[in-house]
Image (cartoon, rainbow, N blue to C red; front, side, top):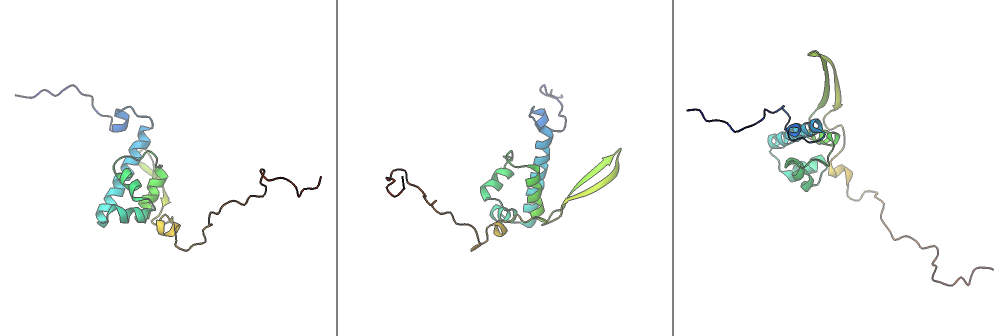
Length: 146
C-alpha cells in the first residue's frame, strides 16, 4: 500500500526563491561559495581559528558564515576567502552551451587578506592620541588685545 505524500510544491531549484526571499539568486550563490569554503577547510583538516586567520576574518565571523548567517558578507568577500585558501575563481560566460569566455577573477592568494598581513606587530600604525585643545572657552580671554 502506497503512502500518500502531504501536499507540497516542487522546488524551483533555489531554496531561497522557494522561501520567497528577495535576491534569491545572490543568496544561492553565497551559499554555494560558503559550501566551497567549508569543503576547503575540511580538505585542509584545519580548524576555524586557523581558517579564519588565513582568510583575514575573526573566528566568530567565520563561524557565522559557515552556519548560514552570511547576509553581511558580499559575494566578492566570500570569493576572496576562497582565494585565500588557494582556490582559483573564474567567471565562465556561455551562450547556447558554448563557452565564450573564461575570466579569471581571483587567482589563488592574489589578494592579501590574512590578518597577519593586515595587522603586523610593530607596524607604523598611527596611534590615537587625545586631541590638542587650542582654545578653552571657559578660561577668560585676558591675553587677547582689545
